[in-house]
Length: 217
Image (cartoon, rainbow, N blue to C red):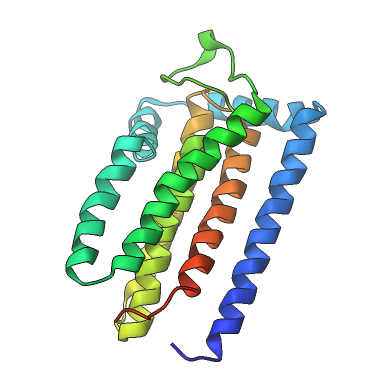
């Protein structure tokens, strides 16, 4: 990695973090002031119009990838493989993305203590508070950090093709977020808040890795 690229990466990461935090703050303000009703109502109404047996199956599979067991099930073998390659710092940062992101999400939920949609409307199991969506936040921050670390290592080792992982992971994060609205366990603003918080945590983890040395090849 060229030395001159480091400041640009840091600036980009800081900018993304600040942007995500600003978006989260705006959503939080609207929720606390009760101004998110129109967007939430429109999103739920759209989800109801798009219901189908096929969508049920596809989105049930998508939402499962945001469960703690699925996140750990992906990170554990990847972490073991990286340990065998001597990438201990990458494993540490991936663990930070997973465990730290979960802790941050719970703190935020308890701070806002927003109730979920009415129990009789839910089409999937869910518990705890609603804002921000844990599935939306954790898939973006965890899988996003995994991709960021993979891309970083690929640049260092001059391995082509790593960027191909970006589109499917992005689509997965979108599908997971939409599934939470589709099954009426979250409001749309919960998902948007989860994506904003997840972006902030992802970029924080990426910035933390940038500042860690030595570089691992």
